[in-house]
Image 1 (tube, rainbow, N blue to C red):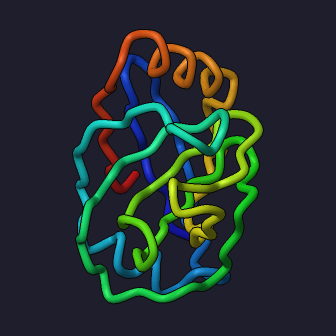
Image 2 (image 1 turned 135 degrees about the vertical axis):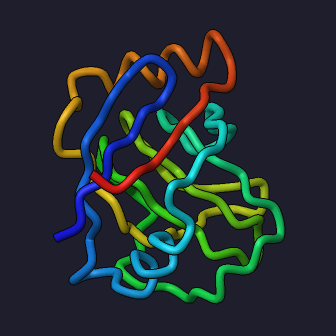
Length: 137
C-alpha cells in the first residue's frame, strides 16, 4: 500500500492510495509525484476543494468511480463532458459541474490529519486558493 504525505495550505495529511480498487488511476498519479498545484473551493459540488486540470488527458477511464465521495476521499475525474480535475471532499459532496452530475475515480484516502480537513475547506472558501503538494511518504 502506497502512502503519500500531503501539505495543503498550513495543514499536513497522510493518505493511502486505493491501488486495489483504482490501479490505473493510482499508477498514473504516481508518475506525477511529487505533484504541486493549487487547490480552490468547488463551485457546484458542496463541501469540497478541487484542482482544475483543463483539457489534460491522463489516458484514464472510470474505475472505482463515485459521485458522492466521503470526507477525506480524493477523486479524479478523467475528463469527457467536463474538464479533467481532482476533487477532495471535506464534507457533503454531490460531484457535479455546469454540465450536470459527474463521477470521479476514488484513488486516494486521507488517513491522518482528518481533524484539519474541515479547517482546510473553510480556509480555502474564505481565503482563496491554497498550495497543495503530494509526495511519497
